[in-house]
Image (cartoon, rainbow, N blue to C red; front, side, top):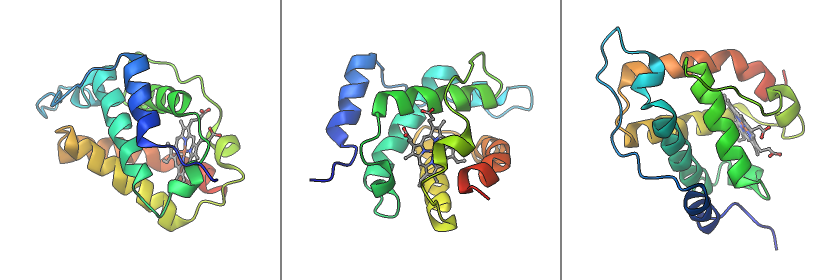
Length: 149
Ligand code: HEM
């Protein structure tokens, strides 16, 4: 039987990692607030990534791509990556984007689906549109590597 990452696995991750519900942690969107702060620092980003995982599981456009994925490792690495990209005090120690996604043949539709889910996860955590767009702008340079272009 093919195995997708399951909601149970994500809940297990939450319990084992001792993550707490970050709730609505975003700082007000003042020009002074760094993007990292607007995302709710590392705890807020970890919550966004957890919510993203639930959205991925429910999304028929992309959930097959995630079958058999180590949820805890994916969660930690994506959280560190977004933390670092947003200017936070984190160091991404996962694999390179081209290498990770090399054999997935990711389509534009799938790339957009993941982006859409990330936006939804940020919405769920009270991140304002300005901060959402600032993060997306920092992800755009990764597009050719993720798509293997
Ligand atoms: C800007 C867009 C994206 C970013 C920033 C991103 C980032 C990441 C990161 C940080 C990891 C963890 C790497 C590691 O554990 O060493 C990862 C893994 C993964 N990504 Fe992406 N990703 C993006 C788009 C996508 C898309 C569109 C898909 C498929 C629809 C996808 C599917 C996967 C899968 C299945 C893994 C797990 C690979 C494994 O553990 O073997 N990613 N991605």
